[in-house]
Amino acid sequence: MGSLQLKSIRKAFGGHEVLKGIDLEVKDGEFVIFVGPSGCGKSTLLRTIAGLEDVTSGSVQIDGEEVGHVAPAKRGIAMVFQSYALYPHLTVKDNMGLGLKQAGAPKKEIDEKVAKAAGMLSLEPYLARRPAELSGGQRQRVAIGRAIVREPKLFLFDEPLSNLDAALRVNTRLEIARLHRSLKATMIYVTHDQVEAMTLADKIVVLNAGRVEQVGSPMELYNRPANLFVAGFIGSPQMNFIEGERLGDAQAKTIGIRPEHIGLSRESGQWKGKVIHVEHLGADTIVYLDSEEVGTITVRLFGEHRYAEDDIVYATPVIGGMHRFDADDRVINSGQ
Amino acid sequence: MSKARASLGRTAGVHIALIAYTLIALFPVFLTIANSFKSRNAIFREPLALPTPETFSLIGYQTVLKQGDFLGYFQNSTIVTVVSIALVLLFGAMAAFALSEYRFRGNALMGLYLALGIMIPIRLGTVAILQGMVATGLVNTLTALILVYTAQGLPLAVFILSEFMRTVSDDLKNAGRIDGLSEYAIFFRLVLPLVRPAMATVAVFTMIPIWNDLWFPLILAPAETTKTVTLGSQIFIGQFVTNWNAVLSALSLAIFPVLVLYVIFSRQLIRGITAGAVK
Image (cartoon, rainbow over all chains, first blue to last red; front, side, top):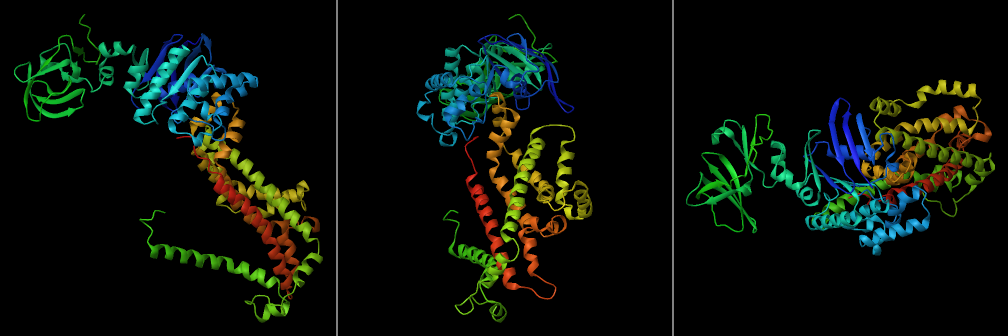
């Protein structure tokens, strides 16, 4: 069990409003990711759900129950922090069991639950150690274990992978995905990394400047961004934005095309351009073009391609790959 | 220090400077202790000489132990110092925690107000303090001294500790809140162990002036039963005649309790660094 409802959440620090009215519904068992640039309020939103920050106005409901005035420990949540936040003076076992101990659970039950969580995360050999004796990846697993032991209605993750190196990040990401499948728990996860968001989420919430820009599944956001911000934020390399006038489109102020939705040819095509830079990534080749018709654009080709600087090439957009945005940066639905 | 950076000349220079400083700092202590074991004539004839079999004498220590209740003075000094340090650390750390952890109106102003005592010496208020102690009947009690010294030590303690407490990770405190720890448990069990080195620093800075103080014991608690060591030693310093043997012996004895306390706190300084909590 674990559903969450946010109704017009507002949060201001002094006169500065960080969250400007957020409505959101999370269903039981969903994996929801808050994503957005730094300072968009995603961590603050997570903290208001945890009860670590009071909301200025609005209501937070967990399982249909208003929790605005409930202490964090009584909300049935568990949180994993970016900096792990393990208790330095306690062993791994005590770190994981502290929440239950505070809640007054019998020792036998605590031991069982800690053992079960340690088994899931292969932490058994480390139970007697202190956090200082563990590596970064192990510490984050302990932090996740501490959350599992509490059997919360809601798991909250605050950028849990940011302090790990690239290889560990992928491993831990897989581990979190596996946990979500096996626990079938509701998870809310904050990150600024869109790869984490795309790979883990059932539902992504894109936040910008304290507002929700769009909510949807990863593929919905990728294929049908609601506005210019989401279009630019989701997808890497970033979507190309071309002024509508340049393409003779009177209705659209901006036209967006993803780099992977443009084809290149040496012989013929829609837009003629000169290659200014090429990045060879093995699986992909990313070509930067300077063209008279559309300015500087990025093209992502699959596989290896032998383009070089100063080559003259022709780019052609894939049919149906164009996103048209109006003067307010909102998408124009042309019924495609 | 890495080998690449430490040239021999540089290292030697640093060590010479440090050794010279150590010698200068320790010289008065050495002089006090050495002369305390000499006879009165020997002290004046050759003040810098070490005690020899001819000049060796325990007359100073005998005078000190016979004269008055010196053991009692030591006990008074120790009680006053230890209780004052404990109170300064407890209240200082609590105020520092409130200032660094909670957002409330007037937070910065309150911090400034609490730190004001660093700049204004408490002795300026002696008359008012004495009047207050007389009114409350606390004159000639150790409580009077403890109260004054606690007030004297708090500003610096609040100032130093609040700076240190700002460095304790918010995530750690929040993790404690989610695990159901009360604010007191977070303060005592999570934050205090992490700022232990800072607490030791504050303890050392608070301890020395309290132990050495003559002013307040003389004014607030001059009675025989409440005399501190520093005040007790003064009976040997007269307007015309000073019993140097006794003065030096009393001072030598007075060094040891502070030394013990200092060793305890400085070990905390080194041991207290509990890394690995975050990052």
